[in-house]
Length: 339
Image (cartoon, rainbow, N blue to C red; front, side, top):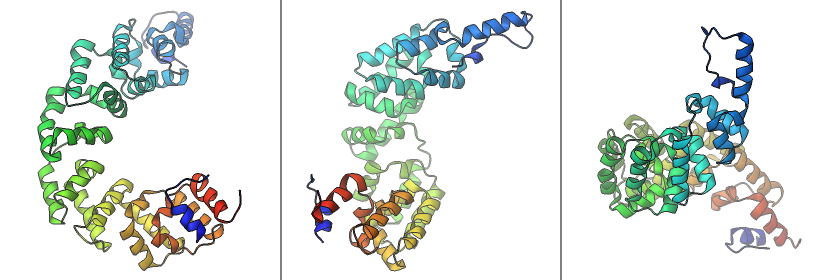
């Protein structure tokens, strides 16, 4: 039991660029010259955009090759003026080099946007919601697609709705720090989905909890899918309107119905009885967002190294989430007097 006290304690113990060829099937250019030109364009240093990304932005050759395959038209330009302006704008705002690279890799159309009329206004709009420059780097590197959306058509109309849902602009900003994708999700049938949640006792504080912690549960599910997931959770025997019900719904949404069902079935192979599985689920549904491999390894350690019975995880579900290397094994050694 000393090991169990140790492990539950919060205290720590000790490129090719051939696709860039400008020649078509009907070119009358001598074939040998074409081949020579292809070799010319395969060299990264001979392409302006590739050279800029390699030498000025710290991209690897494989990353440049990947971008040139995805968006060859971006590499046909002879000028990198817009790309240089965009990158400089991000740097002036205090974005880290990793954040800049992530934005360009995920949303390469930024390389050809006009800074004054296409890029700066979007950044200004998002910043005016209440974000600092450092927060902007965090949000835009997590969701670069925001830079390709129209402020007038896609972003601005959603802000009043989101502020109403979250209760204040401050709450909305906190949610966007964790889940910036909600700015480009569809708001179709949103009211009907809210009604569905309320029918199952998810309202007021619990509804706001989902919005803050797992907003995609609401925004990225159709009415039919959302209702099917809620019905599935209810059929598991979890009390409607309880926090456990909400946590289970979010876990089902994170894993997907099929994977979640497979994890429940797999719990039996770990040595738990059916009633123990339900008890485990009601106590810590979020644990079932862990992979089956992770749960297997932890259970194997608990049974064969620590000497516990499988039902120990019913009382302490967190044991399936802890790191074996960084927490369980070191504390087990302490509990048995090893150093």
